[in-house]
Each structure stands twice: as C-alpha cells, then as structure tokens.
Length: 253
Ligand code: IPE
Ligand code: IPE
Ligand code: MG
Image 1: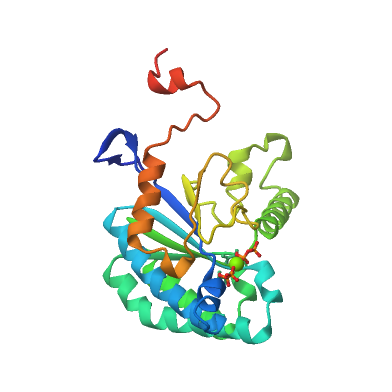
Image 2 (image 1 turned 180 degrees about the vertical axis):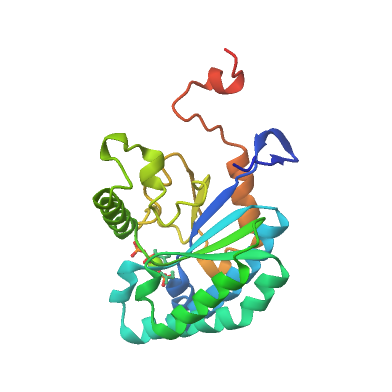
C-alpha cells in the first residue's frame, strides 16, 4: 500500500491519498447566467481538466470524479445525450494528454451499459493508460453504490458456486475486492460542491471513514484555488478511526 505524503505546511498531517468529488451544480451555474444546462456541463468539463492538473501538481495519487449516476439516466433525453456527447469529446481530446501526463484512467460503474461509442472510447483510454501507476484518474460513470454492491455480491455468489470462495471465511477485505474500487484505496476525502449536503449514492461503503467537505461553489466555479482549500481543510483535521484523540496523538499510549 502507498504511504501518504506529509503536507509541507502541516508536518504531522498527511496529504490525502485518494480524493473523490461529487461534481454538482452545473445546471444551477448555467441557470444563474440565463444559459442552457448543457452550457453548465460544458464549463464543468473545462473545470475537470483544471482539477486533474491541480491534483497531479499536488501529487494526489487517486482522484475519483462522480460524473454520471445510475439515477441520472432519468433526466430529460436531450440532457443525457448532451452529457454523453461531452464525455465523448472529453475522451477524444484528453486521451493523448493522459498518456503524456502518465495518468492511469479508470471507470467505476456499469461500463457495459454505457452507449457503444462512448464505451469503446472509454475502453481504449483505459487500455492505453493501464500501465501507469503513479496517478489514477477514475470517472464514476453509470455509477451507484447500491448497484455496485449488487454487482459485487452477485460476482461473489458466483465465485462461491464455482468453489473459489468459502462463505465461512468471508470478511470485508474479500468482499471489498469485488467492488468496482477493489483495486483502489478508500477515499480519504470526499468533496461535494454546490452547497448540497448529501451523498447521492456515491462510494457509500468506501467512505466509511472518509472526511467530507461541502463547498458552496457550483462545480464550474470550484477551481484549483477552491480545491486546494479543501485539501488544506482536510489536512487540518484529525482522523480517529474509532480511537481516542490521545491514542492518535501518541500512538504508543
Ligand atoms: C452535476 O450538475 C452534473 C451531473 C449530475 C451530471 P447537475 O446537472 O446536477 O447540476 P444541478 O444540481 O442541477 O445544478
Ligand atoms: C450527483 O449529483 C451525481 C453526480 C454529480 C454525477 P445529482 O445532481 O444527480 O444528485 P442529486 O439528485 O442532487 O442528489
Ligand atoms: Mg445536481
């Protein structure tokens, strides 16, 4: 497992290894400017590029962005189509960049149910970047924690049927390896923009001990400066994982 880096200004507080973001508020950003919601999503994609760059400059090893939930299919068809088109053009324009920056690209979610054209591009980008191991950008697409749990339990049950898992030996480590995030550390910090205080079916199990940071800015306005502020806020907190503050401050006590 990778060791967390110390934050330069706070020698005792480590940097997060994995930051996950619920990128919310594109629609409201557009509405406030009298623009169509699609324009908010377009600006949201521009911000994704800036935040990916910022995360890499801070040497954050894992960045996971919630881009499309299983529930988002129920939005008006033209909005869903616009989001898929934006995803397609993002992948076309960023694939080379990701390779140049040595960023591994992953998807968490039911990739098999994405529209064919987007699915092919996603698979191509995953394949082209799979050998990089320093930085990982994951997009949560067609993602929902409950669907993820269903998929995990189903795969596990099939493994039991095949005889390759023993249900009496089941523990969290084994079950979590069946999640989409099985090969990633849990998020240390989950950020949600747009002033909403909810989780919306995102990384529910993985965030059991994550720190949450809720920002008022809508996603297109949540630029690198805001992102750094969130990281600073994280670094100023004390995580306890069920222990006492004293145990955390002097681990030998
Ligand atoms: C987040 O912005 C992007 C997606 C969910 C795809 P929204 O589109 O949810 O923006 P609001 O919440 O309506 O402002
Ligand atoms: C969560 O935002 C999903 C993404 C950011 C992709 P939503 O806008 O869909 O969440 P709710 O509906 O406000 O809970
Ligand atoms: Mg929203």
